[in-house]
Amino acid sequence: MSSYPETYRYTKEHEWVHLEGDEGTVGITDHAQHELGDIVFVDLPKVGTQATKGHTFGSVESVKAVSDIYAPVSGEIIAVNDLLSKSPEKLNEDPHGSAWLIKVRVSSPDEISQLLTVADYQTYVGAE
Amino acid sequence: MSDVTELKKTPLFDVHCSCNAKMVDFGGWNMPVQYSGILQEHNAVRTGVGLFDVSHMGEIEVHGPEAAKLVDYVSTNNASKLKVGQAHYSGLLYEHGGFVDDILVHKISDTDFFLCVNASNQEKDFEHIRAQNHFDAEVVFASDHYAQLAVQGPKALETVQKLTDTNLSAIKYYWFTDGTVAGVPARIARTGYTGEDGFELYVAPESAEHVWDAVLDAGKDFDIKPCGLGARNTLRLEAKMALYGHEITASINPFEADLGWIVKMDKGDFVGREALEKAQQQGITRKLAGFEMKERGIGRDGYEVWMDGKPAGWVTSGGPSPTLNKNIGLCYLPVDKATAGQSIQVIIRNAPVEAQTVPTPFYKRAK
Image (tube, rainbow over all chains, first blue to last red; front, side, top):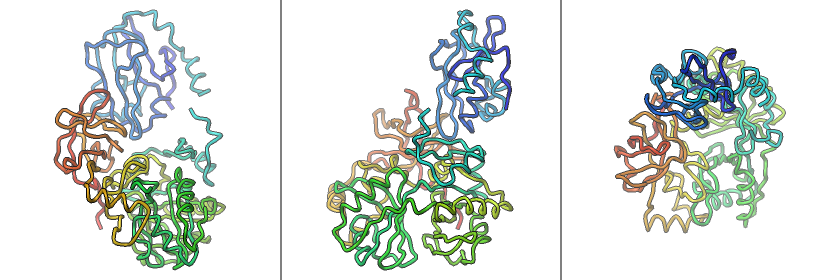
């Protein structure tokens, strides 16, 4: 089981965001990939579109089901991870690293403070 | 999450939990959806052997001098033509021609029939059959007397053969025999819901864990995998086997579901016959068809299907096909359009995604 990076912030919908300057990298958590099972398709938005905190920006499909992914922060999408269009299974292998989903130019950095810390998130998934 | 404490459990519930299976609510039953992963389990069944706990399935027995007459009256296939030791797929219909359930009918003797029915329909099926019982026959709700294990895949025969004196090669497809497996009494049926060769074993609930362990041990040489309902669904979809609540429902008749072959109109009266005669005379308006996604995306159950710029039907089951490495599905379309080679659009999250109808089944094993 992957460990949850200390520097990331998390949502109750099992996304993470890693803020560096005003650039936020967004992905789904190890807990999420484990719950989904074998991931076969990742649907991501186009670069240049807007992500809005709490709104869906794409979806991840496992063999069994499709799950919406929600933006943990708002801002312009400046990159999407091409790796996942060819190799969606990477999301099962490295959800906190190479299988990130999008990068966002964060428009309201204060949104970050509303997200869960690693300790809060681990307590949350432990209790779920 | 739903309250798991209220869900029904099979006799193998503790075994699944100790194997770290992921458990889900399936029609009121707490069932394993996967163990090692759906793709691995799926491939084990296509290339080697897999073991499923399908003890949630219901069993109904019909006994008595007119048992065959009752079974014939409540089901669409011709039960009177079954030989002792033979089984067939059949439908239970309402008077209006829609499905109560799809079932397997086994003929135990001239006066005894054994029906395997869907888990979530078993009480409804039992009441339905009992209500039609104007014959010298007794209908028994027997689900509590049986656990059911499915051993499926090209190595299923070799696996189960290690555990029984019965010559399994002599059991033809859709035949069965009563014998022993791993030293305990078992009904051994060469049936399944995966599109592969294999056996469904009906044993006493208290023997379930013993037989489960024995089959896993016997299949070790073939890398046997315990398989969950996730793989069961991808396997049956590739083989185009219907799932109640999806391809067949109370508002779908067998002709629409492309199951005309289980309806024997020449056998005499049966529940739903009049409605089916009318459907034959008037013609059906919609029919089940298979499709493949042509663009990126997966058509899932319930998604709308469009043709020529208008709504035309809906997806009944859809998902990735691990064997074919394509995204496939089944859908209802206007009957004149339910042929292979049609261009359709599946509406995925409000956007039309291109797909094409294809011949079915999607997968057929080499004989």
